[in-house]
Amino acid sequence: MVINPRVEMMPTEEKVELILQRFRKNLRWALEKSSFYKKKYNGLDIHAEDIKTLSDIRNLPVTTRDELIQASAFDLLTGPLSQTLRFNRTISGLYRGFTADDIARNIDIAIRPLASNDINKTSTLIICGNYSSQYLLDLHYAAEALGATVLPCNSVDAAIDVIGIFNATSLIISAKNLKTMIERNVDHLPPKIIVLIDNFQDTTLDEIEHHFHHPLAKVYMSKYFGFAGIIFTCEHNHVHVQDDYLYPEVVDNKLVITPLTFEAMPIIRFQTKLTASIDYKHTCECGRTFATIQLEK
Image (tube, rainbow, N blue to C red; front, side, top):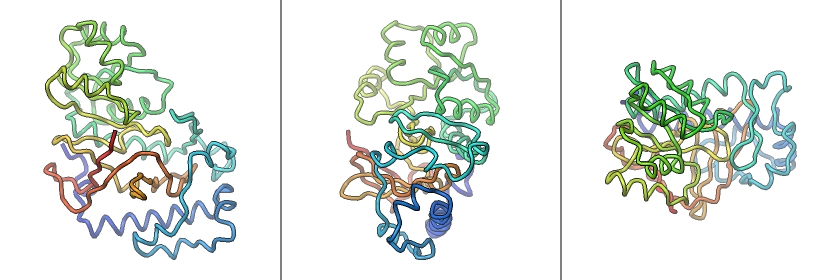
């Protein structure tokens, strides 16, 4: 199900203009409020108004993980700590702060892949994993926003018990934990399984899909930015990037990403180590005009 056709199926010309508007606003905010980017861009004569086309974005230097790890979290913050509702440490070791608006947008990001997998008010959904994680919190709130009954389980054992008691219809779980369930020969797994992916090089999912004899729905957790669902597989098993919220580029075959709406801690042109290709030219069979991405293992 496409929960927001106006955005998810937006014509390409409108999408480009939206990306440019958000990128300029994001860059302007970083230049004004982020000590990290004031230092990084010092002397480079960078102005948000110079970004008139997508190709202009490539003139900006990339930001590396090493730079972010070495920077103080307070240099990355654009406001006082009192305006930051949530702080968490991502899988990659980066500290990320979120304002109320950031959290609301993270939930909107998570809603779309869940709706794509028919999570709705008729769903009884188990979310299995460590609930100290920002990723699971966003997915939990997104599922509730869609009207689902959500059953949080901090362990595989708890999830196995809950499956039998509540006759769950859907399960969100990591590939590792799902493999454990399969090895335990759990009866009556929910008919809808959504796998959380945080490592694109992990081959566990290949083993699991071989077991089920068909592809499973996948929601990718951003190991760098602390949210889930910005990349997800649609009903036709194509991998999409929600490019109204995150602008993807490929530079020297590596994925470079810019979150377009981060308020607490803006990041400009983050250099990942992921080998990727992006297809902007073809509309997916699902009808979404989000960029389609291929990530190499």
